[in-house]
Image (cartoon, rainbow, N blue to C red; front, side, top):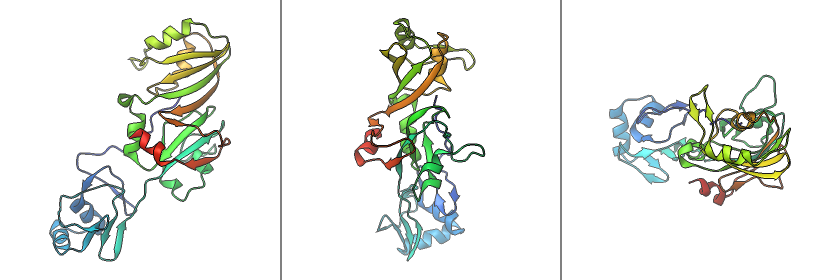
Length: 256
């Protein structure tokens, strides 16, 4: 079962600069310039007041102007930051690990034909032996909204079991299940029986191996797990396992 992608935690009004790229949600322009130019606030103030700094094509003189990792920031003719958000849909095959680096297995990043692939993180992982829809992005706010349990974005899976499924499963999934190890109770989940040993499961969260553990309560091993959709983003049937494409504007906006 997928885990929420581990993201950088930001202190209030703080940011980091890595390889000249601001990796934050939002921050003050003057603080970004101080860090990027390795100078003090007085010098930055003089740059701003002299009209030498542009943000998204407009001259900015306010020190407390809010910028983020996708703001285009320019000093005179020097471009300090010009990042574009990237959103990718991948049809993850079985046997590929949901990670950016791995010493033993091929990773989902290895499958991408994308110039910005090394800047991407995974929004909702899938196990090594699971397949289906995987989303990758460099936009942490978008992935936060996508995976946060409070936003209750539906994640739909087709699950194949070793043994037949009964009506008893439906009520148990709808009530939620208590996991003593973490001392948590899962949110209500929807289960639809598609065949004797095939079900469609809809979750609003992604606890560790959640689907396998929930079926484990019935001593019914999961032998196949395939993610069909996340919210309104549905796995493109034209994508073969291992293939990917950029998300459409509508798909990206559906998570906003």
